[in-house]
Length: 106
Image (cartoon, rainbow, N blue to C red; front, side, top):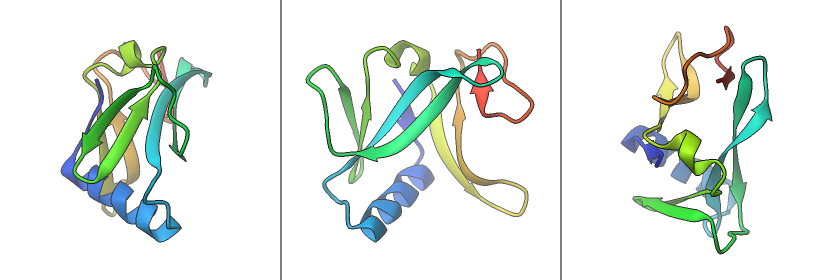
């Protein structure tokens, strides 16, 4: 299943606190779309289904739906805050290729 780096978990916790949404979870999913076939979707969610997979990283709860779970197996969510790279990025060993913009994969 997907893991969060300490940096990503810290940033997600900051964003949740800024939104006053301490009771919400980060939902990570894979959807059809993008130029390579699939794309990642991440958002804060207060609704957790019975069949969702729930993970905890420090004070951050992450939920993944069962359909996305196999495509996120072994993936890592990181947060970069440098001059050349900023934002969240997923490294996924299941992706055989990705598009030039890095937003979609297959």
